[in-house]
Length: 184
Image (cartoon, rainbow, N blue to C red; front, top):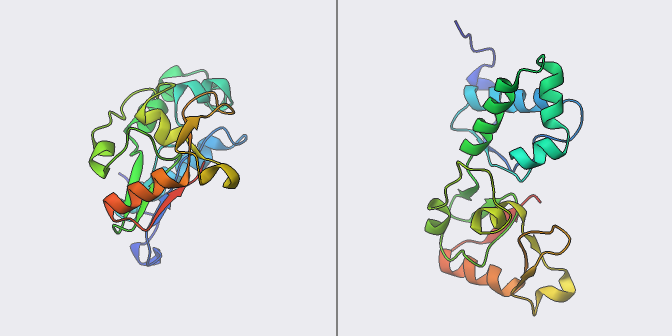
């Protein structure tokens, strides 16, 4: 039987929004992830965990998470696969009070409205191009480029785009948001 250890009265008055990249950050990624999942289980409406670009098979195999899981769980591949399945179920964006559009990466040339995000199949390994890739990987242009650039290939990341100020303004205006909040 599961016993709730944390008392609901100890929860902060505000909700918590995490923007991704919970793994591949050292030797304790599993512990960080389990702690966040425990918070989510205990406070399901107060904790939101968005998917970051590291919550994918490609990134966890390239960096350290898969290796950490196999080392700590006696080479049990099914535990790693369960983590991947949980990553694919994470939302890829959040609307905070109708004011802030939040995601790990950034905007996409394919995005016009919030409904576009709701149509994305997130239950997949992120491809190296397309809308899902952009939400997880895109970056803002430098200050110097931002005024004139709409979208340009993101050479540094080898996928997705860099976006300028005008596309952000268009998304904010069309969807009545105050700001885009991102973590990448």
